[in-house]
Amino acid sequence: MELEKWKKEIEYDLNKLNNEIDKLEKSYEDLKLKKQIVTEACDEYLFETPEEKGYIFTLKADLHDQIVKKEKLLFESKTNPNRLQLELLLKKIERYISIEEEEKNLILKN
Image 1 (cartoon, rainbow, N blue to C red):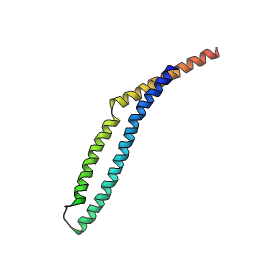
Image 2 (cartoon, rainbow, N blue to C red):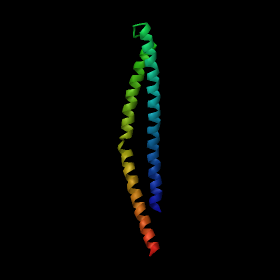
Image 3 (tube, rainbow, N blue to C red):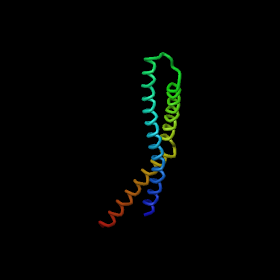
Image 4 (cartoon, rainbow, N blue to C red):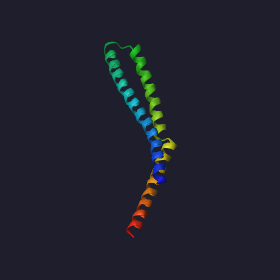
């Protein structure tokens, strides 16, 4: 069945995009955890010294910037027109496959 083959091709392309999103999400979560740890270190340091200077404060700002960029990239990836169109196309193909199977079953019953 030609539709089945095409469906697999579309699923493959969609899975590639979804895998990229999964990697971005993992990277995003890692950045958030790092920022949380650095923020706690900053808070402890500020408790002892009221000066927001040095490595951990620079790192905190850098992590914040990376998180903002990663959020934007994640949003763009999730709303990528190609991804959304592949999902729509896949649903349509599945619908047509289902119709073909129903027709085939009706023919076999008669």
